[in-house]
Image (tube, rainbow, N blue to C red; front, side):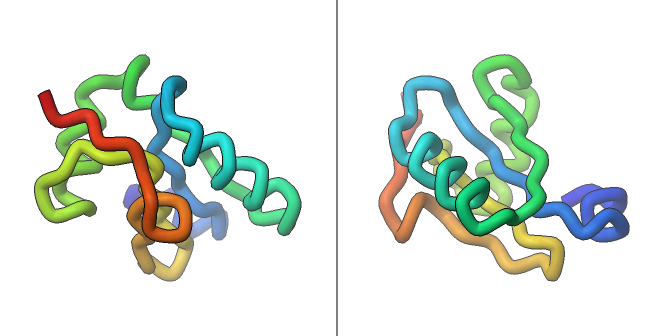
Length: 84
């Protein structure tokens, strides 16, 4: 996670537009008033490297990095896999 997200206390969510679990995670973050920044890996394909690093090598969304550094893979453990 970049330094600015820790400093501004925002979570960072990696998402993909075809991933329904991303929609569910986004809705829950908004519902719980959790401030977050979203990175769409379809528009920023270079960010897949960061997703793979966070997930242990998988191209999966959503991935959420909380301000304290905790990482959540998938929405409640379920995500969309984009390995080709």
